[in-house]
Length: 254
Ligand code: PXP
Image (cartoon, rainbow, N blue to C red; front, side):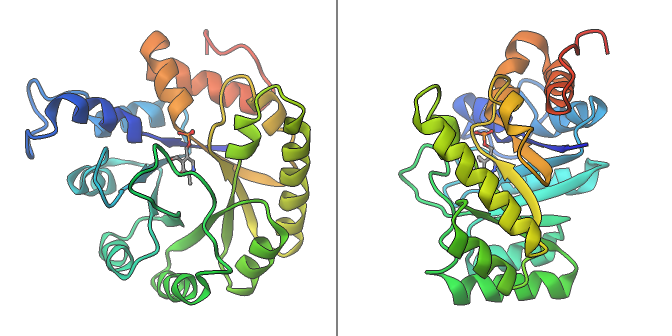
């Protein structure tokens, strides 16, 4: 069975659109509360909750992360830039795992995988600090043979293969090439002993193909689930994705 990490960043995006300057309060009119929604996602079967604490704090805030650490019953996966400040932050917070991602202030969302080859020393320092603290490190990388090989060499336990290029290819001819790259990448990572996760741009349609990738342990999915929740409610949206991930198509009565 493939596990589902639900990324709740965009629950906070909606709150920040109106209440960016409201400070700490979460009661009363300040809504939606991403922590309450994380608990609903868990109730519907999420295997973990993922948040990206971005340097520009455009959605998730430090307070959200602290409250999640206290409240959720599954695993907390903290996506973060590979900087000494965020490493220190994670060591104090003690999430179950961190996922190292590239960060660029201008981007709408994480655009490409982290360049492990070009940032080897910084990445290694972070992996070693996390390994020593018992926090699993995942490296968000493109399905590129050199990036995968170095991820294993640096003793990261997990990789998350970036599915964005595949998802963005939509129905064009490029999609099959991108899927083939992902398939080869998943095999290589598995053979090197890495736990293989994947994420970015996965939705209720392309999941039918993504779920056939070999060796996938967990998918991290955010935007499509939060968008679907506007129609169906979050619990239904999570249940439906979990059903589709595991080859079932009916979720509404579960
Ligand atoms: N995995 C990683 C590492 C990400 O940075 C993101 C986006 O924040 C996701 C998964 C989720 O992507 P999406 O919102 O497109 O499902």
